Image 1 (cartoon, helix red, strand yellow):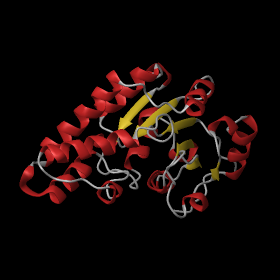
Image 2 (cartoon, helix red, strand yellow):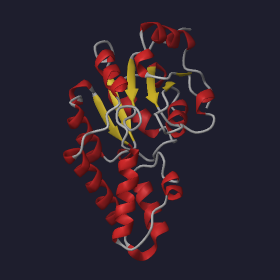
Image 3 (cartoon, helix red, strand yellow):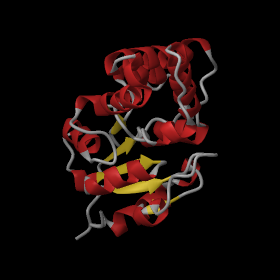
Length: 229
């Protein structure tokens, strides 16, 4: 049986903006402010985590220099501030895809970022009104690769998970979307490999979201939501 696509759910970082360096630099600065060091290896451990999760990791790794709540507030404040003062590193094929696809499908955004960061990003990009639902992993039980944020996005859209298409750039995100029973397009972000196995787990992989045209969408409908996890 052919299952149509009735909604599209976008990730934020790596799909619409490339602000992973901002997050890393914010954590480095916050750690330095309490006399500690946050490394690239530390950063890799919080990929896909929601705010509670990565803040807990910071507290565990940085010792008694601060609390999880304190680290969360400080890092989020720094990233939000950068959206207000710096040129936003937008990913233009992703922005064009949002504009193009919102004409036909209801859209949601499902991100591991803090809600304040998501709001700052969407305002800076000028695309907030394109999304019928916006969900932070902070609002659900667990961050990616758990399916929670994608299942909540489909619930808010009132669309069955099997009828949703997800656009992702990372292994954690692809795993989350597949665990939710959704089709997923993997578009690796420049300079940020998605992780081993992401290409085979995704429904399809594209070099750019500019290639997600009507022909590709028809092919995704024909493929259906593959039950692999």
